[in-house]
Structure formats: C-alpha cells, structure tokens
Image 1 (cartoon, rainbow, N blue to C red):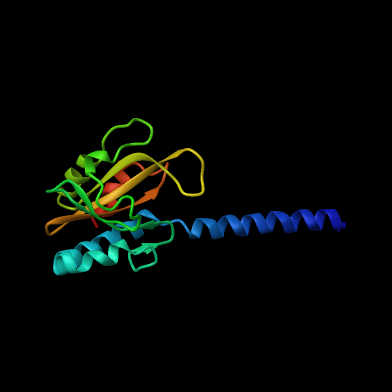
Image 2 (image 1 turned 60 degrees about the horizontal axis):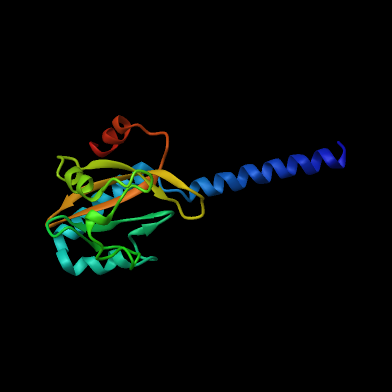
Length: 166
C-alpha cells in the first residue's frame, strides 16, 4: 500500500474512535431514568439534608454530560442545581430557548404522573452552537421533584415513556 492510503485509513480510524469516545460521554435516556429514580429515593428519604449533594458539579449526581437537579414545585423554584445561577431560579423563568414557552409548569406536571414523565424543550448544549432538543425525565420525590435530561433528537415521546415505566 502506498503511504497516502495508509495515512488516510489511519485518519479515518482515528475519527471513528474519537466519535465513539464522544458518544460514550453523552448520557442515555436509560441512565437518566435510573439516576432520577435513585435520586428520588434519596431525596424522599433524606429531604433537605440531601440537597447539597445535588449542587456539586463533580458529585455523584453529575455524570457524563448531564446531572440531576431538584425542583420545589410547591414554591415554584429550583431547589438544587450544580449551576449556582440556576439554583433558586423561579420555575416560571425556565423557558424553551426557541419558543420562549415556560417549561417549569410542564416539569412539575410531568412529575405527578405515576411513573414520572418527560418534557421536551430546546436548550443550549455546552460545546455546541445553537439550541438543541433536550428531553428531561422528572419524578416526584417527597416534597420535591427530581429531574435530569439528555440531548436527543431521535427518540419519540412513546419510546421515552416506555423507558420510565420499567
């Protein structure tokens, strides 16, 4: 084989490996469901004592490209979040980045479903330009609701709901 062909093949292999590594850094809907259910049990059992753990960017509740955050639907605020600018924010101020539609109420309503629920909205994605489809799973946890999301433009609502019903 000639040198150019070998170099080209090596470059293609390297791109394929780096794309695979990047994909591995993206949380999946299944992981989100598992973490949110685990977090709901934690928050329900330990209430306010547990909340500081959800504020940590490098804690147990932050992984890959996502994190679990806690909503206080009764008082309409973000109770715990790894971004200090979001913690304490009014849920009414959480808005879809494309439409401006408020999403806090939708998150709280979805949390009340038997198995929790999913909310779809457009959001900024770290390291990428523009707004991207994000789907967040939310579940009631005692006096709070817990949520985490993934950037996904392929999964349907029906597919997502099936994951949370397991």
